[in-house]
Image 1 (cartoon, each protein chain N blue to C red):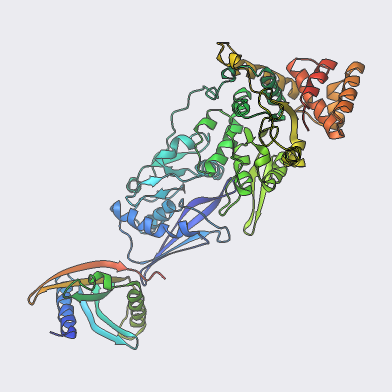
Image 2: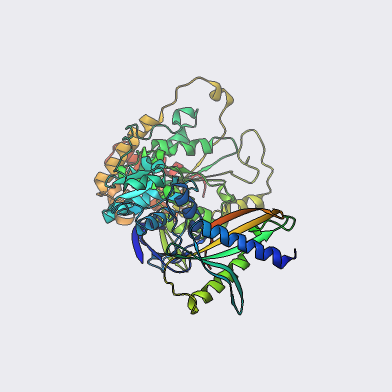
Length: 122
Length: 491
């Protein structure tokens, strides 16, 4: 399995998990010039931007650590772009979640969901 | 979407200035920002408030939270805005009952939601009282703010308490009335009758004293006992002094009990340390000694700049610091007691040990106390080491309490005569002294012998008038003048 494959399967797992806890997936891999949003979902009346990080080992640090302040800023920038694009018609609450997945075996993984993991604070 | 406003205040000088904490919770990208010229401690409130709200089981809104501290031009310092910001968020998101925010809130939050006191609560309490609002604060500071008679204090231990609305007003138990009797007692100083007498005169007349003597003579011991023979602080004075200490983050209990402050800054004190300064500005030692005693041990060792800076408080009784962000004013009316060695080695004039200083060094040493300070020293007196026999003898020296009674009586007489002002200068002073011909001749003789300037004569008369007051004499006689001229031994 190459890295792309790992990431894709991680995002599938995350999306399945989010639907199971009652969220509706609105978009996957929404792209703009500056990058990509993994999952955009709806939780009640809030729009949730979910960053998914999958790791096979923690040699390079945990999945959570990979969502650095720089990465957060990039996601916030993308979220702004999403909100102002045609895809979204939303003026309610917005949230940023992180789903961290640690692969243990081919068919086993640990998933952690961080609600409101970060904010758009400058 | 939703907004809330909570009253608070920030310290400028020794006053608490009203600040309105406006909280706006609206949709949009989640963010938590604080605007309105806060310092780092104010901006760090974000992390404390967030953790404290969650720890107490409240929701931290996943929304755009904007906090504005108005009026924006005043620079805001410290952690006291944690509580009003948290309360504002709770009120804006409807997590506390209506009316829970109808108070001046000042307090720091611990991460577990505990409310902690901040410096200057006494000033905040006075300001809240003036605004006619209750004061929401940490329970730990209740006894302090209860000294402000009018304020309705609403103490709280943790943020969770707010779920039931604004806490009920409470007062600390009234403190007992043993006003100012705990300090060191004059009876503990053996011998030194002349120095004790000088202290008594200084206390009665509000005069500045300089003790000159070798190390170990008891200069410091004597100075420490001056607060104990001054009349206890009046309620108003106690609050004045306590506010300064409160702003500086120091304990105020002894002041509120009527004990006069005694400050003895080390001679390495910086100008800012002595008269106040820094950023944010803090009161200096001179202000902490307000209504009490400022003791400068080893005066010649103080930096000349720091001593020069004492000029304004010595003349006006307050200090003004001018900063880019505005001017602050600190009260600083204190009794000055200074001490120094007669020469750098300390033994000039000692009966046993010889002095080893070259004469030039002695001159240099003495001229280090600048003019403005010397001008304010009304009495100079030599204090020598006492005979060991006297030290070991079991004698009963007079306790501070009875000295204080005489001091209070003398001050009462002075007040009677002067209608308020302690001892004036110029014509008023001459009139007050009512010298007869003999006494006048004594003054002239003293002026010639000690080569007194005009100001020197005024000081001599002032001391003489105080001595007469202590003796309950209407006129200043030759005897009083002669005693007064003894306190001009040096200078």
